Amino acid sequence: MRSIHLAFVLAVMVAATVVAQVTMSGGRSDDPIDDDSAVPVNLGPTINSPGDEPQVAITHSGLSLYFCSDRPGSFSKLDLWVSHRTSIDAPWGEPRNLGSMINGPGFQYCPSFSPDDREMFFTSSRPGGFGKLDIYVTRRLDPTDDFGWQQPINLGPSINTSASEADPIYFVDPTTGEATLYFISNRLGVSNGKGGFLFDIYQSTRNEDGSFQPAVLNHELSSPYDDRRETIRRDGLLLIFTSDRPGGMGGLDLWVSRRRSTHDPWGVPVNLGAPINSEADERGSALADDGVTLFFSSDRPGGYGQGDLWVTTLKRRDRNNGPATPEKN
Image 1: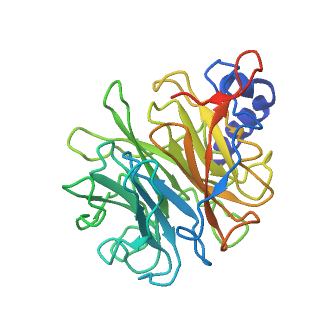
Image 2 (image 1 turned 90 degrees about the vertical axis):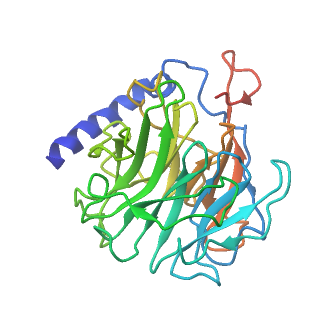
């Protein structure tokens, strides 16, 4: 079964050398990210610590930045923290730990939010799950209260298995209202050569009663390599994820895929290139609701710790190779 999957994905990756620029944009050759368009900026010592901040998320309001960190003050090995700002143009405030309701023993990884910011999907290794890492959901009544989250609920066997499931990204189609949960899993059990297993990208459609259908492997985005945390633009036509597949600049890079509509398959992923990617590791990204602002983690030089959070602006090259313009959503 896995051999068939690997052969299929390898064939797709070979085809990428011919059609990547067209396929990734749903047939539009003017959409690749411009090489000179976005120099990443470190979020600074208020957000970053001497420790590791490997993933980041932002609410749809754009006023709360969530991230995981092993900094002092954590309840476990990796906790969820949040920083708030009073407006889009205001500076980020001092980060606060989300507390023991959300941060259980072990590891917590970055969340994703429903469009109204009332639901938060996140990863945890807390006791009582199906596997090593499971995906949970928590809810709050006030979408502006970062400490109003209720007891997390395991998403159950349609999503979680005895393996590890992580990095949930929740997307609601703005046209049809159909909700899809993208996430990663190593349930196929393929060794990564480092004592663990390779992750692939899966997806599940949400039922009207709030439950999820059995998850299926996304062949367009997955590869025979390690594919991790995704972030999707609010229109559902652009998705960025982390991968160590060939063609990158460092160990882990950010890759982008596009599609013509939310009912079409994803196009062949293309490396985002410099200056977003570097010889270091880039990972754990999050697109803001404006579809332009991209937060991500990197251990490139110039940071404050093992892995810092950075921000950049996505732009595209126009049809006549003129000046770069902001990426449209």
